[in-house]
Length: 114
Image (cartoon, rainbow, N blue to C red; front, top):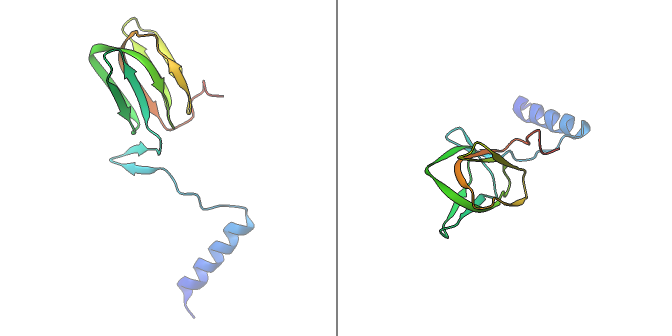
C-alpha cells in the first residue's frame, strides 16, 4: 500500500469536506509581496511610476503627484507637509499635484478600507 498516496487522498478528502479551496497565494519575491495589478502614480512632469511590490518608496526630492491608480494595493502617499492620501485596492484617487515624499504599499487590507 502506498502510504503517501493514501495520506494525500485523505488530506484532499478532508479539505473538501471542510469546504476548503486551494487558492493560490500571492507570489513572493525577496520577501516582498507581488500582486497581479500594479499601482500607478502619475506626476505633473508626465512620468508614471509603476510599483508591484509591498514596501516604501521615498522621493528625494519630492515629486508633484497628480493621480494614483491603486491596482491591487492598499497604502498611502505622504506629502512634504506631513499630510497623507490613503487608498484601498481598485481605487483611482486625485492627489492634487502636491509634492509627494513617500509611497507606502501593502497587500493587506488596511483599517481604513472597511
